[in-house]
View 1 (cartoon, rainbow, N blue to C red):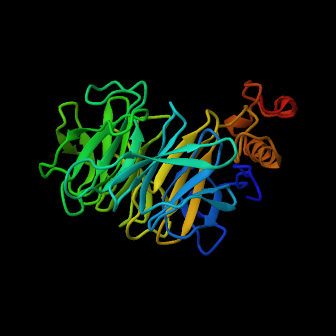
View 2 (cartoon, rainbow, N blue to C red; view 1 turned 180 degrees about the vertical axis):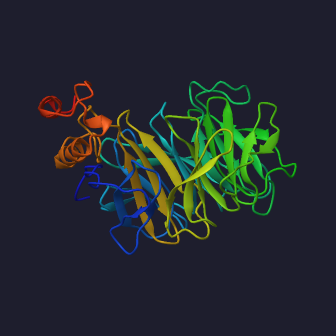
Length: 365
């Protein structure tokens, strides 16, 4: 590893539906405020996440092996393993868990202080027959439903040649799995799962967004603005009850409100086939980061968004004060737009300029 710093500065400036990227056409950002913070090549990344404990990106490869990477793509092999399908971080133990699709196992990874990792077979068979675990997520401590237990883990079994079902299991006790949804035909090819509030949502490649109720019944979330025919990954926005969904047929990520309104966030990711669990989210309380792994395009993308840090933070990248904020103020001032009326007297004059400069010079808190 040459560089152990996770975060590189966000790209300066952002326009809606502007093509950003460091190689080729790159992805297109449609939702205002986001920047493409990182974009690096990586062969066949099936799933990726930012570990909030150390800031590194952990990546699984479909044919096997777990990698650790920094934000500019310096990577190292952490473990030689088999057929990774999904990866998750447990906030209570700090452990990583990943699913091995073909062997049918859930593996636990404990990260050691010397930079090495210890791998333990955690769940070695959900049921007899064909096991194909894929999506994994922790059950939040503030989960308010009744089907799951806060602090446990929950995962999907897509049952390629067998049953589609949902299991919950302990992050601290191995082989402690419990089936909470058997296969009754309502799940078609369920490859990812997300939990927030009392809502359990699943990405089903053949059935769109599925919701799992407290009585273990399954329904389909009816959406407007987009129809999901190849849903491959799903997470909750950490600052709302919106779902963020990656769909291979659209080659895009959509924001989906609780009532089903879908709006385009990112497109042009180079995704067209299998991309299970290809979206994860990290939020340090200031900056929100979405990491997307694109199997078909052999790339990893990190998108970030930071709210303004003060009244003078008028332009992206937010969270820092620079020339772009001064330029935005001058443009608003010359156009006599409300955001340039810094002393709120309805008049645009030197006092507004002085007030802006005072706030700007105070810097970000």
